[in-house]
Each structure stands twice: as structure tokens, then as C-alpha cells.
Image (cartoon, rainbow, N blue to C red; front, side):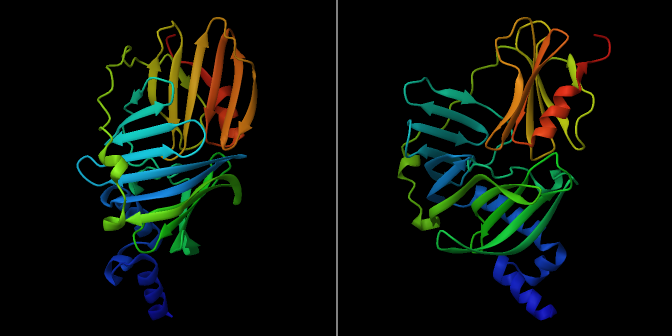
Length: 309
């Protein structure tokens, strides 16, 4: 039985027996995926489904220092997203380019959790099993399951030969959601077609921010376990702030605005995006993120002024 298990490990992950024995197979698969996303040249075509919406995209990735991505829409309004290291530029037909510097970002592939293993919160558990075929390539399925209903789970179909994620699907309470991406064609290494990336200029440095970060005026007094404020930025309006909470994988934006706001109140879901907007004693609190509705509702209900304000 042990020999059979060792053979299966080598088949699924292409790892030595020593490496497989050193840590759980699922953790090895996670680390191998993150390394492949940065270290390999690859290109391909993928389909992204968000709720009832389908979109076809082309992606090219070139390893290097920094590594670079180019994501291009193949239907609908023309869109290109370029990444060079952590700097990103969006170019939408008919609109000026938008340059961002989101900080930690290692891939433009949608829905792929972009976090090192050490930062994975204990609210999640990893598991590995056979995944069948995706884009004519055999896979192992990496499951990331939460321990509560405050976050989505993930299923990642990883290419056995390279470790690249060929398909990613969101889940809720173990059930698949209609939000996923999957490659329909993939070329790796010498087979990759990087012609479009060769012609794309690296994303230019972002413009200096107009407003510096400031001490938080608002706090989330009762966030779900594992969620902490990572970013706090003022928007120039006295008493207004933008907070970003994360558990390492899931992120939630909180917008607090004072004065009249024309946004309607209420809550809802669009695909995997949940949102709630409500008033608190003259302030409008809007919370949205790729998390279940109870998460944004709990965060919205617990927004409060920090001590001394």
C-alpha cells in the first residue's frame, strides 16, 4: 500500500519521494503551483464564467525579473491587462489606461488564490485527489475548504506535468458555484506563443497617490475569524475611508462615506460578489467582496469609529 501511494504521489506531482515525504502532498502541490505561475513561460486560451456571463480570454506569461503577464479579451469590449511584477495596467477600448500597484500580485489568472502557503489562514484545509483531464492534460485536483460559512472554497485542477492551474472553481458549503475559469488550450515553454507580450510595453510605474495613507478613523469591531484590516485609505472627504480586510485569500472592501450618497441601500449577490449598503447614523457603509453574504453583512453591521473619534 505504501509503495502504491508513493507511486501515485510521483505520478500526480512529479516530485521525488523525499520531497513528498517531507510535507503533505497538498501543501507540496500548492507550493509547486505558485512556483510554476512565476517561473514558466506559457500562453493559452481560457474561458471565464461569472454567474451567467461567459468571457473568452488569452493569456501570455514570460518568466524573468520581473515576470510579466498579458491578459486579453477575445470577445466583447476590447480589454488588455498587463502586469510587470506587481504593477498592473488596464487598457479598455475607448478609455485612457489605468495604472495600479496592488502590491502583492503574482498572476493575472482569475480566481487563483495568490498567497504563500505560510500565509494561508487556519480557517482553510488543503486536500489533494485525482482530477481527470482539462485542456487535454491530466490533472490533480487541489481542494481548499473553509471551516465555516464566512468564505468560499476553491477547487484547483493542477497540470500534473507543470503544476499550472488549468481550472479553478469556487464552492460554497462544498457545492460548486457558477464562477470558474478553465483553459481550453495551453502551451508551455518552447511551445508558448509570446508574440503579443513581446510587443507590449511593461506597465509604467503608477502615478504617485494623491492622498497618503492615514490612521484608521473607522474599524470593524466584529469581523469574521481570520479577517483583518490590511489597507486603510482616505478619499479626501472628512470622515470617509476605504478599508480592505483579508484572511490571506478572500478580500473584502469597506467604504464609509459621510454626507448625502446617491447609492441605493440593500444587499445582493452577483456571481461570487456579495455586497451590502446601509446607513449608520448619517454614514453610508458599503461592503463588497468575493465572499458569502453573511460575511459582508457581519462586517457592515460592525463598522464603528475608532477610540478617540
